[in-house]
Length: 379
Image (cartoon, rainbow, N blue to C red; front, side, top):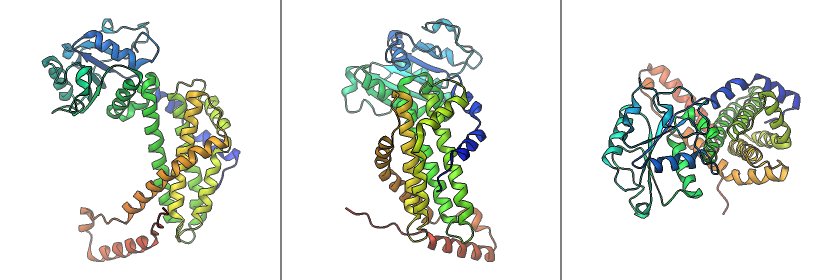
């Protein structure tokens, strides 16, 4: 892909709806945490809210295991159930978005089972956390019937909280994953990692699509200019989301301008991808896809380090992240190419007239021939 001049990058920035992204990440949510012992539920809420604070976030409701009445869609959660520093930021909420059920026993108590069944009846995802001596048993983390995910931890140490947070990120509705992570710092590592991986995969898939198009005479120039814009836009939106989730604040334009400034030469990875794409159709499509993935992943990791630790983004840091991600990119490229080669008969194709089927078959064979075989890996 061609490297873009700074003027073009700012043009792309102007086309991104920063206010909409910020509004989505600042969306309110409702997490329900219940346990047989109310104090155990409070400890879980406090640990998930902050590693240092002695209070928990006002968007978390803590209750004992008899709190199934809280799930009524017509019943507003009572603010008195919250142990928070202030109550002014408490939004009006009803049904929880997800729940965390804490048990000190391997088998849930009848009250927790009833609460879990009520959650399932309303399609509310829940995470079961077994904490204490029973957590060392081999079957302690195996989900029982009706459970979505189960985690077993010996205590609420920092490492254990990280495991619970990572599991919670998996069950949180996708649209609320980043809002959860912005307000609950222990969830940030897992949520940001998912964001980076998803964006890298999207850019790799897009790069593969344009790579196929570039094998068609006359389309090389058009797609070559377009893919640089699309990938850059995806990378900038990812970087902006990372900054917001990590707790950065300020006007959208100023914050994204700061991101562009600290990235510096990070976008130069696209130039390497463009050079490799020139090898198509011999073997260039595979490294192009791999570089699109690795370059996006490297930018995501570098921005994360800057946003969470204040570390300066240097060419050495970018190169380290890039080398780290290149093997992941190669594997992603292999999966994409293999999936493209795999025939997928569809019901719609069966209804096509014989002549249309023949034309479609010939077209697929021509495209398939243009997909290069992966070069053998060197040991």
